[in-house]
Length: 220
Ligand code: OMP
Image (cartoon, rainbow, N blue to C red):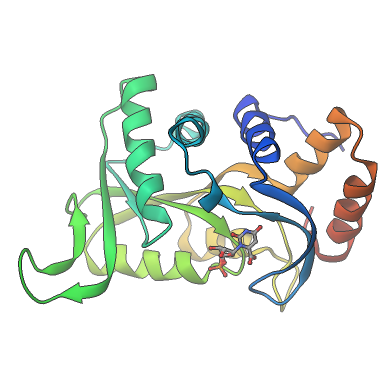
C-alpha cells in the first residue's frame, strides 16, 4: 500500500522536522500511550513558520472542495490557526471567509457573550484545530456551533495521528466523522510522516519505531 504524499503535507513535515516541532523519542500522550513521536504546533511561532503553516492549511482546505462561510478556531490553540488560515485563503485563493473563536470564560461586561468574531447563526462552519487525539476538544467545538445555530460542514486539523480509540477499531477522526457526518481534512497524517521518513532516508531507527507504534495502535 503506497501513500501519495501531498505537497502541502510534505512541506509541513519538512518544516516541522527542521524546527523541532516534530520530535522523535519517547512521549507520554494525553491518552496515556507512550509515543515515539510528538508534534508540537505551538512551536511554529515565527512569522515565517506561521506563513508556511497557513499555506499548508489553506491548500488542504481548498483542495478538499468544502465550501464554508466561517472558520471556527476553538480556544486556545485554534484561535491563531483560524486567523492565519483565513488570511491565507484570501491571499492565495482569493476566497473570502470569516473567522470566529470562543472564549474559555464567558464575559459579563463589554461586548458580552463567549463568542468573538463572525456570528455563526445560519452560517456554514469549518472547525480548525491542531491535533485530534481522543477528540475531546473537537466535540466541545461541535457543541458550541450547534448552540450558536451554525451548520457544521467540516473539521480541519494539522495532524491526524490515525490511532485506534481506547474501545474499538476506529480512530478518533473516524468516530467524529461518523458522529457528525462531516469530513475531517488533515494536512498530514501519521502515514504521511512514515512515508516522508522512508523517502528522506537516514532516519531508520525513528522509522522502525513509528512502524512498530503504527502496528500496535494504528488504524491504517
Ligand atoms: P484531544 O483533545 O484528546 O483530541 O487531544 C488533542 C491534544 O493532544 C492536543 O491539543 C495536544 O495537547 C496533544 N498532542 C499534541 O499536540 N501532539 C501530539 O503529537 C500528540 C498529542 C497527544 O497528547 O495525543
